[in-house]
Length: 261
Image (tube, rainbow, N blue to C red; front, side, top):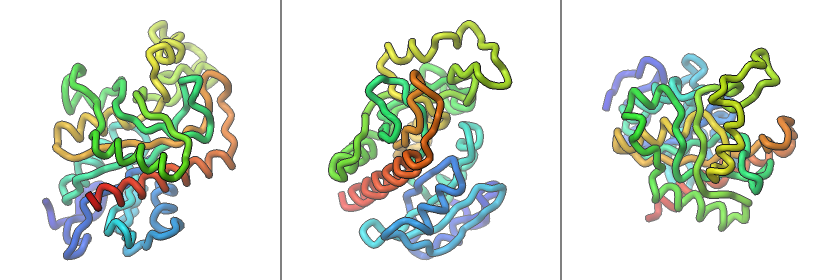
């Protein structure tokens, strides 16, 4: 563990106080991390740790689960891998990704949550962590805590496998974009994943899970579903806001359960 500020996250162990947090909620969107820290009931923002490179991090406290960090991973696995490495270096031992995603399975609707117990990991960054055959599996205790929290809060959620890919457009079979051409290997991939019972697309969990297993920290992921990918691309902003709030509530309740065990 380092006392000096880490190059990318912009803070070090000495910034975390005498009783340092060991858990972090990790968001791709810096504004979501800020909302967790400053706009969530029951959460106090003790300090802005850094806003270096747009990777916002906040030292937070909740009366029922102690201190934690709300931090930004940036978009995609390469950025996440840097942030996670440095968070582990300052003593973080539990990381829950609080993200957004697109539904693949027919039962996954906009506004639902997906709690990932594993990921189909189609990510180049993960190959620098472990071989392609190495499992991308979430920590079972974190996953159970997330699922239990969603059930207790009455929030509609799905537990299963996530597809973690590197690109938002081509990799998720979007051809209505600047590049209408899709490689043959990606044509029909969403339907193939649906048949494999994969629930959703997102861009970070697979690498996070492999890092957790290799580095020795507990990793979990809960994502708000913003669109039903086999139906439409449109995002209802009211649904998005509520689903994101639900994902944060579930993650915080899971932290409480994990801290009390």
